[in-house]
Length: 202
Image: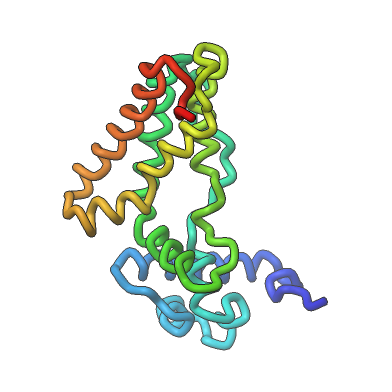
């Protein structure tokens, strides 16, 4: 079994090199391009041979530039108990991060739509977990609400996929698009709370 190049010797130096390549990739994406390994090698002054040891192709490079977070929650330690307020806090952070990382997320979205793509990054479900965390009090106060399904519904109306549709297809300015995503999240929560029956309905 082969050992990844970065796992062999001079770990700190290799970590710095990889970070330089990833940073350059993100900067080039933010400028509207879709950089190749050669582009990033030139931008960093790192030899193409070395760059290819870290990222053997463009797909690996763009996947490496995808923002990563393992945070189990987007809520502060002193988060309120009201689900609406909690959802507002999560949506504020989630949508702001989506806009800040839009070029990288768009690249990941394109990769996830390629035929035969393996484990598309945008299907990891982290955002659903963050939204579930915001809605957790409903399990006690509104037991007829399927919190998981409500979180999925809210996620389907937010995130980079929705941002792309609202800006590229509907033609909304980003400020209006993000306002609409926040509104959609609260509207779905309001529907679940006002329905009085099982949500979502069977």
